[in-house]
Amino acid sequence: MSVKIKFLGGAKTVTGSSHLVTAGNTEILLDGGLFQGRRQAFYEINTAFHYNPRTIKAMVLSHAHIDHCGNIPNLIKRGLRCKIYTTSATKDLAALMLVDSGKIQEEDVRYVNKINRRMGLPLRKALYTAKEASKAIRIFRSISYKQKFCIAKDICATILDAGHILGSGIIVLDIKDGQRSLRVGYAVDLGRKNLPLLNDPVVPEGLDYLVMESTYGARLHRPIDEAQSKLREAICRAVKRGGKVIIPSFTLERTQEVIYFLNELLKEKLIPSVPIYVDSPLATNITDLFNYHLDFLNDKTRKAFGKGDNPFELLNLRFIREQKESKALNTDKRPMIIIAGSGMCESGRVLHHLQNNIEDSRNMILVVGYMAQDTLGRRIVEKNPFVRIFGVEYELNAEVVVINSFSGHADQRELLEFVSGCTVSSPAGGPLKRIFLVHGELEQSEALAGLLSQKGLQVHIPDKDEEILLN
Ligand SMILES: [Zn+2]
Ligand SMILES: [Zn+2]
Image (tube, rainbow, N blue to C red; front, side, top):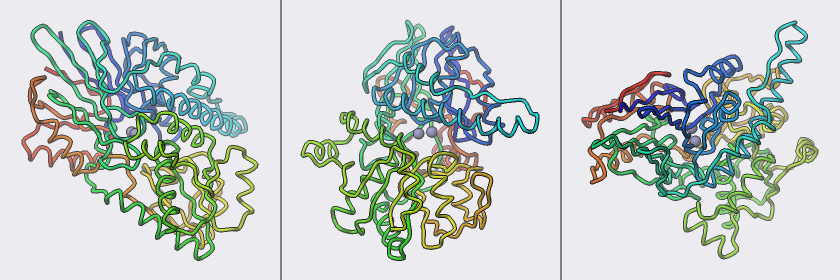
């Protein structure tokens, strides 16, 4: 039988990860991510399928970030009926993330349609609503790390810890074709060693093919420990001048990491004891899941929980659910730290905090995550003198501090190290035949491809919708 892989999304870009593996007549989807970008492209790309969702036999989901799972409710609307295999933590996290994504889309459509109605333009519909998203989780099935499960007669899969976010997985597909066996690894996204809450990524053995992310294929991160000292310096500086620190943060993982570091700094009395607000009902619910899925955390964190030292319970930390309480922060002039989503400043409560605080030079916008092209977050990082929020232009006077060491993605050195680990052949399979670099802006993927080629490895950066035969 022929085995093919088609790169449906997340090729030569960082969002919208989705890949179709076809083995004989069996179609398996790896991830069903949402492409995130400008509104027009968002609707066009996320609704154009070059395959039939009805004929998919199974989906394996790597993790709960929306660029990997966010198009699942839409796929279900278009006929996807198979089971979606993933870890229990990803299943629970995805349930929250998808409903939130549905809510964001409904809000966006309401806003756009107000304008479209006035201008006599056709009205838009959300890709899916929060209600539709909440039903999607019914087809999810939980699988433990390292537990081999079979999708079809000769096709089995295993999920290994990717060390990227809670519950994240590297997917390994084992495909048997008579005497021939093929092992395909999918490390999208790949985490890093020594992250504060998680275990290190597991290196799969005996791969024939590897599909790997390359978000930071050309960059080196500072060591993760540095995040804590940079956080301390920045917060001390802003608080000293009486400013507020706004941290746009991804609700999933980054928010919990930031809280973890703030907890460490407060315990050592290295930052002033100012109020800390996590202004996001979603982040609050996600943090609850971290408390529940302790098995997915590293030894150190689990032991801390065992001793009653919960890193997410600080005296001056408050999780805000109500909008009223969120709005009250606008008139509170005390120095404080506000952690709010969305991470790239494209939606959510962070927009209100930016609107209220961006023009005051005492304040600080502390960037702790990746900001994609064409997002407000990227314009802030690039320190544009003026930025547009809710259609109004604001002067960017607040200090912008970027801490790169926080990343949950492997950097160039770590990606190379991971590939070296994968090239060690094992009885389970032969040496790596080819690496496909996805999930990266082109210059990042190309830089990494260059270095891997120098090591004698076959590397390819696929185009969107390109299909390749694996033999
Ligand atoms: Zn991710
Ligand atoms: Zn991703």
